[in-house]
Image 1: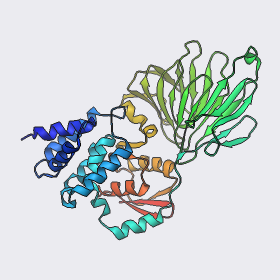
Image 2 (image 1 turned 90 degrees about the vertical axis):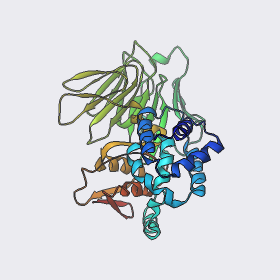
Image 3 (image 1 turned 135 degrees about the vertical axis):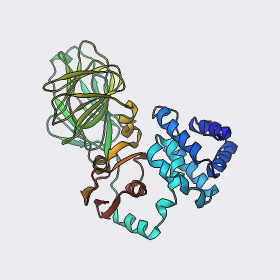
Image 4 (image 1 turned 120 degrees about the vertical axis):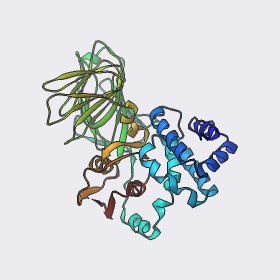
Length: 390
């Protein structure tokens, strides 16, 4: 029998409309025996309905609400929800509930957790990047103060108050005759950066990525080169297409929003969120519509086109890992780039697959512990080395 009140309160919670009294009532319903099947259905529906562009709880709000729930409930009522988490977590607001289910199980062995915690050496993660100028000079953008970095030949490069690296071509009649130079912005492991190119195009770089670009755009095209992953919001210019070149793919746009994942030794994935783009390699060309992803495999000449949840491709920009039937090697590759760890594999584990959504602001230990709760995989941590075992 469906509990209509539970359904009503759950939907209000997802829309951030729940009152303090309703929140307490909802937690009581979550704890009651017999509601597990209905909760499963609600979580599955939410997976398909809500995405990162919705009106979701912030990480800070989620953390505070989790503390409230933790202080109000007994550990024994949280255990049944642990298995739900790995399949149906789709966004911060849903993660909150599901984390309640696994909170005490992930802390079942305090001695073991303390040992692991002391072994993990966390890197400082966040806004980190190096700007390399045409003359080879390097500027650590993380430590640079807000204000002008370079101002010459009609060009101004500065770090604005939001921390963005911004290029502005100064008004003047002689701009067309000024020399064109190329800069590179590169993020380390555990770093991300937002820059605004001279044409107004916004670029968000993910960890362990780099972009090579001109300080001003002239001619018939706007060309940049990418290694790693970036999300682009391209300034519209129908007379000057914007071209992104990777090691295997060329992406051609006039002005649109898209994500490119082009890390070395991996498939190149181009995902379109808005507008239209053309993706090509040496032997084929495809046109993408919003919600489609083009996959270029090194072992195949034909580009594969598939429909996807496009917002999940930019979850990293919003502070999340999203795993959808991902194998453990793909998952660990992401953790290597964000947490700067070394990974090795022992035994038959490479085909293990997982679903879930995790905040990348959390300690890596929390994520590894969560994966271990599936009972299909385990981790051994020694300094910065993580060994994945069955």
